[in-house]
Image (cartoon, rainbow over all chains, first blue to last red; front, side, top):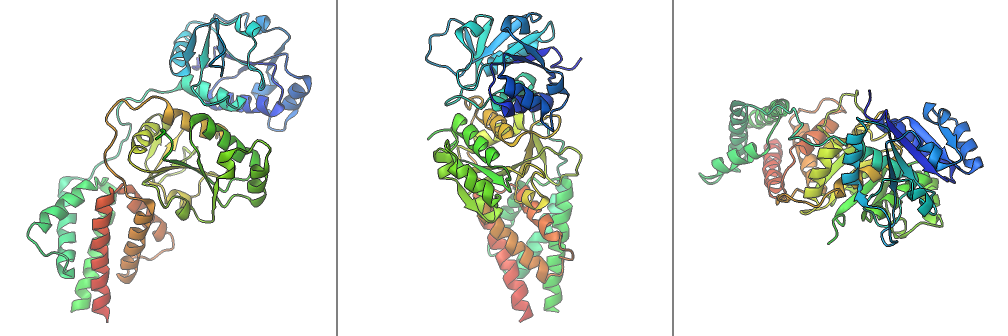
Length: 234
Length: 234
């Protein structure tokens, strides 16, 4: 089973067909597919479904008159809100934390995440169907499609464990060959004046932290430059 | 200073005015305000700026002909890409990890995050100005405004807990000066044979990830080498 097979994205009273389409696209991006619409503006719903790019998610979206029916099969119902000041009757969890809970709960049952209308958000009545609320910590309210994208991103977010880079560093002997070559070119160019300069250059090359392949390329570059300098002097 | 004061969001070749507006709204939500447009479709730019809701971010957006100018004052330039299969010349970091690095680097200098056109993304040439690339791990490419929202969300996701990196990266304009100098020396040395070589060298220099001071030292090194080559030829 895919991670978001058990997730239901529920849009309540959505007005703008572009937003319904944008939410569906975000769902596709993050691997969710069960879209539920509660009392959307009729025109918005029809337009969104008939859009050229409307994929499976929009075609299979279910339309409900009442929120209660849209979330009936879910074991956890989470509302999203941009409100900070209105006195909320629910516990409010930042999405960084709420997303983790949703992710865990998805392994044991269906979870609904609710997004209210563009203008008013979820009503108090809508919220009364929620176990708790979650919030993206932003200045002002977000665009609906963007809010869906950020929530799904957080729910599917892969925690970073160490550096995921497979970059292969150049062996010390290659760095030393490169250093020798560079020192040689600098000596011929009159750049080296003090005995300590050699050490400085050696450190400078080490700080580049070159991957193996790049070390080779730089080696070729300095060999060519040195050849040119020496050829000129003959 | 606010966390994202040093961030520049750079939209390259954007076609749709609604996407420019959506990116600006996401920036407002997450506290970023410096929007830079590189060669946007003229109509898109004008429409976006004249939109009723166009706020300060759009009004103050700067328009550039060349990407190099748009990122000239940045010490870290990060490109976004949806590509998985194309062979990339850059290291590619998932946004979960890339966002952390950007957050740290913002405390020491300006960082640019680049988003390509809706249809084609960033070109190879665009990418050659980047230190590295980052990716949101999705199925298919994201809507532009949603991609901006997710990236900014990740960058602001948690307050910095570890030590912010004290290392001061070299501004892009210094890296470009260094690249020009190196290209010049290589041309004189007979190293450059193909038109694509210039792009390769530009990427090679960006991958060095030079601190500001080291960039200066390398600049001095190549200036001296070039001087020697030219002096010999007189």
